[in-house]
Image 1 (cartoon, rainbow, N blue to C red):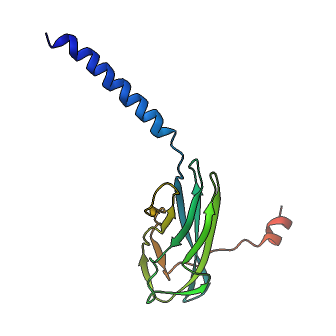
Image 2 (cartoon, rainbow, N blue to C red; image 1 turned 60 degrees about the vertical axis):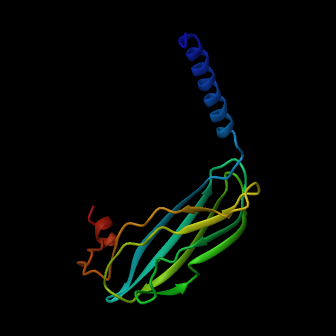
Image 3 (cartoon, rainbow, N blue to C red; image 1 turned 30 degrees about the vertical axis):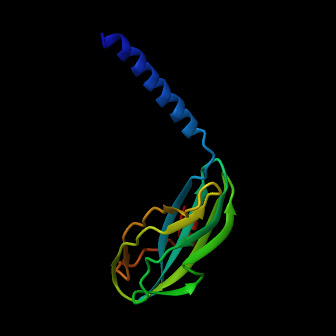
Length: 162
């Protein structure tokens, strides 16, 4: 007796799930994706700088407002800020938009360093609470590592010896 009722109930539940998931997929919201990258540059023996760039993409269907970037993963006992800041704000990032922020640090201490992701906060007009996103972490950096000197190519010898 219960079997004739089960099929319509299951069909109704499946239809409800499909309709609600299609409505959720069409929701108009920002979707923040952030990529953090760092590269080492040796100035001279015993001196290195780290160039950091954070690219923030809005892959959603609406703008993100009051966007803030904070990258507090650089301890002051290991790094000194040479140029730029580790934080930045933007009024908004439109749908499909990209913003970038860069800064440079000088290394004070030798060793391995693995930085944490940067934190991005933003506001969606339909929600009161701030939303939070995280960048990709950086690969571990071997700062002030002993590296063998790179052999530089003497282009003049290379070109004229052909």
